[in-house]
Length: 341
Image (tube, rainbow, N blue to C red; front, side, top):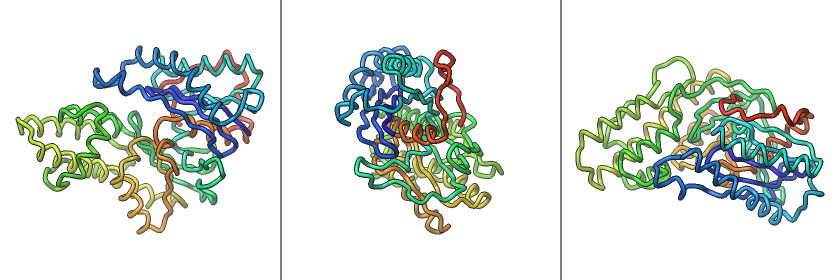
């Protein structure tokens, strides 16, 4: 089933062509340079960039995949969660294409895309999860979300843990800004952490003793601010040590909740998704923990599939199509910025 997928959930303009679980193209136009001077995403600029770039990105995705609209079986689009005025650009574009080319429309939850991104295969059918074992447990860590999702089957999900305030990725970016690092702070912190001592600076592990599976990073962010202010002038060594210590603390906070959820729900596999999972330390520590538990841990074959992208939306759309879950009322489809899986 050939699907043109579109994602404009935040500050990445993305389009992809998938066929079943195979990803034939996955084009992402990044808006980082547009938002960098402001130290974060500026909504009206994000919308403008999506409006300008989405037609070009769609054309590139179709050209790279070697398909025309006649070849497509459906069009898919992210309808939430995300930045409201960004989501509306993708939704409007998808509706226009559906009406023009008379194709069915599939509305996809952005977080379901992250959850199912490990099922994606390359254009030759390589990689991806071939033997899913349910229940599965998804750890989704991105700029806007930090979630633990129990997956009983495709389309059957339970949100068992989420952040009560800041997401882990958001915390990375804000701490990066405190340290004077360029936006986005997350990748820069990870790069600097490799040069630092992770035990040099003691930081509190948030929600360490709470009995639930929820996360919180606002208190850690405040602790970081106080410690950085106390230091005064920041040396290169301090910045590197702080990045290593901060990264270690966030990873430990995630692992504590993941381990507790694994112990309670006994999943058959772990699915990792979201931009923060690009972090090598997080990947390594999750794999080590799951090896001890005897539970396989999966992440997408391509780094791009961890970021905000449309390839994962096409994969999620394929599973929805198999369930016959198409949009029945185009006019009734609207953005849902606070959508929960």
